[in-house]
Amino acid sequence: MNSSFSPDVVASAQYFPARSNRVQAAAAAAEQDLPTAEAEEWRYSPIGELDIGDLRPVLQHPVDSKIQPPAVVSDPAATIVLVDGFVVSTTVAAGWEAKGLRVEVDPGRHSTVDGRAATIFDNLHVAFSPGALIVTVPAGLALDAPIVVVNHHHTVDGASFPHLVIDAGEDSEVQVVEWQTSGPGHGLSVPVVELATAPAARLGFLTVQHTSAHHWLVARQQSQADRQSSLSSGIAYFGGRYARLRTDCRLVGRGASANLTAAYYGDGRQVHDFRTFLHHEARDTRSDMLFKGAQDDVSGSIYTGMIHIHPDGAGSNAFQTNRNIKLSEDAWAWSVPNLEIENNEVHCSHASTVSPIEEDQRFYLHARGVPPKVADRLIVAGFYDEVLNRLPVAPARAEVRKLIAEKLDHRTDSHSATAQAVAQ
View 1: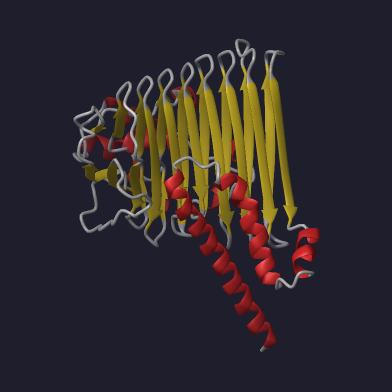
View 2: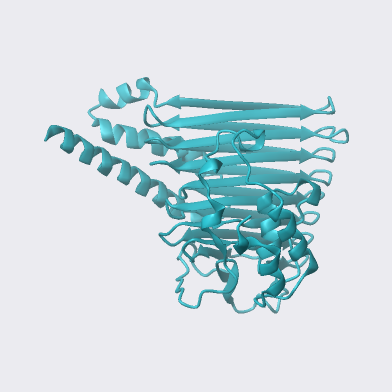
C-alpha cells in the first residue's frame, strides 16, 4: 500500500477526531491488494487500470473550492454541500428544524460493512472518511419538498470518502436527491450511503452521477426496510471513467417494499458497473428492480444481481429486469441476474437483454421521413421513458432527461465530425 494511505497517516492526522478503528482499518487495507478482474465480484471491470499509488487521501476540506448547488428542485427542504467528503454548507428551509428535521455530522460514524467481508475500499473508507452526514426525519413528519445533497470531488489525484445516512422515522415521508460531480482531473471517490426506513416510513432516494471522464467511483449503498415501509432508490449514472455501485438492500419487516431503478448511458471508454443484492428476510415483502442502459463507442456496462428469498420470506414477490441497448459495434454489456430461493411460497422473475437498436423500429421511422440520426435519437429517448418515469424525486427527472439529451447531442456531433473527416 502506498504510504499516503498508511496507518501512520491516520495516527498523526489532526483533520478529524481520532478513532481507534481508523488505524485498524488503515492497517487492514495496507495488507490487502487491489482486487483484480479475475475475482468474480470484479469480473469484466477495468479495475486493473487503477493505480492507487498515484492517489492521496484528502485530509482536509479544500478551501479553494467554490461549489454552486444545482437548481435540481425548487425550494428544497434542505440543501447540503459536501466537498471531498467534508460538509461545507448546510441550509435548512424555515420551519423544518422546528418540526424535528435534523442535519448533523457524526465524526464517529463509520460504515457498517461486516469487517470479515470488507474490501480494501471499505477499509480505506473507515480509515479516511471525515464522518457521516446524517439526515434524520422524525416519526410522523412528512416533508413536502425534497432534500438536495451535493457531493463534489474537487482534489486532483485525491481520494475522497463521503458518507451519507438517511434515517426515516416511523410513518415519516422524505425524498432526497444526491448530485455527484467532480472536477476535470483524475481522482477517486469511495462514497457510502445508508438508507433506513422505520415501520410505515416512505423514503425516496435518487443519486445522479455525472463526474468527469477521468474520475473513478467505487460506491456502496446499504439499505434496510422495516414493516410496511416503502423504499425507492433511483440511480442515474452518466459520468466517470469507471463508476461502480454495489447495492445491498434488506427487507426485514413484514410487508416492506423496495423499488430499485437505474438509468445509465456510457460513451467513450466509460464503464458503469452495478452489483445488486436484495434480501427478502420477512414475509410478504416485495421488490421491483428495473435497470436500463445504453452503451456507445467502446464503452461498456456490467450488471450482476441476486435476489435472495430467505426461509422466512413466504409470500414475497420479487422482479428483476436489466435492459441494455448497444449503439455501436464495439460497445458491450454483461448482464447476469440470479435468484436464490429458500421458500417455495413466492413469486419471482428475472430477465435481461443486450441488443442493438431494432431495425424494424428504424425502418418504421425512416419510412415516414424521419432522418436516420433523428430516428436513433427518438428510439433511445423512448427506450429510457419507462425507467425515467419510475425514478423517485419527480422534480429531478427533468434534469436527468437533460443529461441524456447531452449524451445524445454529443453522439450526433461526434458522428458528424467523423463523417466530415472521412469525406475529406
